[in-house]
Amino acid sequence: MTTLSSPTKESGVAVPRGPRPGEPNGRRRLLRAIKPGPTADAGGAALYRRWWLPWLWMAPAIIGVTVFGVYPFLNTLLLSFTDAKPLGGAASFVGLDNYTRLLGDSDFWLATRNSVLYALIVVPLMVLLPLVLAVLVEKNLPGIGFFRSAFYTPVLASSVVVGLSWQWLLSDQGLVNTWLQKAHIIREAIPFLSDSWLILFSAMGLTLWKGLGWYMIFYLAALGNVPKELHEAAAVDGAGAIRRFWHVTMPGVRTSMLLVGTLTGIGSLRVFTEIYMLGGATGGPGGADRTLPFYIRDVALDPLTGNAGYGSAVSVALFVLTLGLTLLAQRLTKEDEA
Image (cartoon, rainbow, N blue to C red; front, side, top):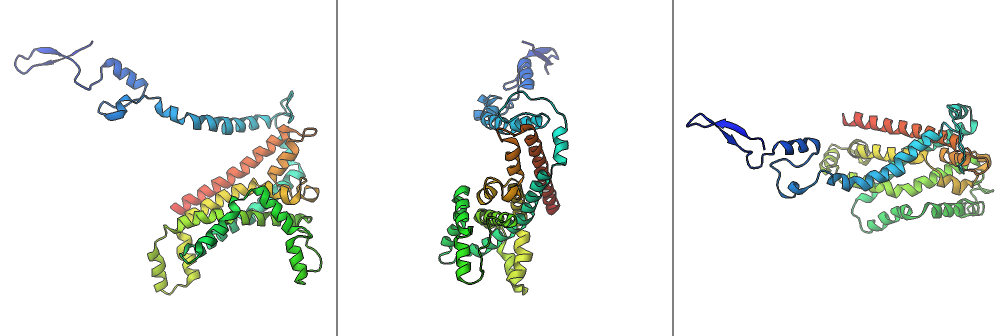
């Protein structure tokens, strides 16, 4: 073992000195430089903790993200440059042909229009309506718990069950048309499930109805952090309920509003179930109500005519559109914090 020498006060002669208690020797210093570990002054369980133990705890999450997130994304990106078939088989490299075809595909642009229109209408309403609902049910009034549970019930229901219920409500002989005809408001049944525009707007209504209770919980948590003194001061200054809502409540929950807008925007671009349940397997008459996920299913997964390579290119386009929305929301968040 290498020892250090230091002169003594009495003789001035250097005498060998070993490592001090707790001081690592040369080998330990080398291992510590290669493998991180607890410092010399660490105590308790940290002295016996191995450097790989945190990675062991993180391994399930890392494996899950890699298998179900990173690998499918990279595989989709790779397939977008091929003419792969949905049932497998030999696939050849086609370069940018799928993306060139995509730019001239009228069905793709129709699906993009539906998805963007869906987001433009649903996102503002989903940001404001749950906030208004949360303000109404925030107060501790007798029986308010029943209304909170009633508003949250659609969240617990399956999307398929909700879709079938709305089919029954909006059909030509459904509850809505029957009631409107008996009330002499309309003469003929409104074609909620046969007109392309009405199918799209009905699907938007279904998305709003199902999501109100979920985002109401977000806002209820955010409203609890808004100081009551601000409302009291505004009331003393003569501000009414609407002005207090606009100038006190909304600024206090602005971060939650941006979060709800981001989540709703991503969900709107990925909507599928609502269109399928109300518009049928074709996505409305002639496929006029197909959104991008619906179109991806049609062009990529058909066992006879499907093209997984082209469907992957459409998926990449949907990813870019979603990423742009997310980056825009992130920029708005930073500007709000500044």
